[in-house]
Image (cartoon, rainbow, N blue to C red; front, side):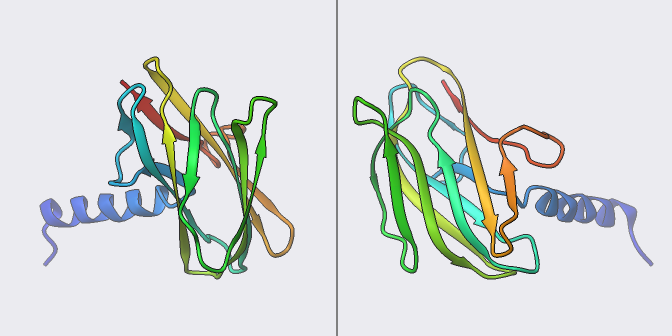
Length: 150
């Protein structure tokens, strides 16, 4: 016989793990908050959610975030766009993330000096050319990842 006190929390945990399975940026330790002005190592986690491979990931760097370096990700090439002052504004990783796999991309950055919310916009391209926008254009289907800077 099923015990509802045991089954419901397990079902909720399973639902949350599936619902949360989208491209996200977190601190290296998995947190969604960090200190203002702090240098932090971030990880971009990108699961393939379709039956075809992910072939490209584009990250738009939020205003006030200063990326200083990247960890090498075997099997991927990385290109960056910079503004007139030399700050990284966009990063594109090209490679292959097969169905039922995920990739993590690590980078070091300095947080904005002021407290607030940092919104990470991520665009995931699949082998058929389709793009999933994790940018809040449709928050129910493609929520942007956020970091609270305190």
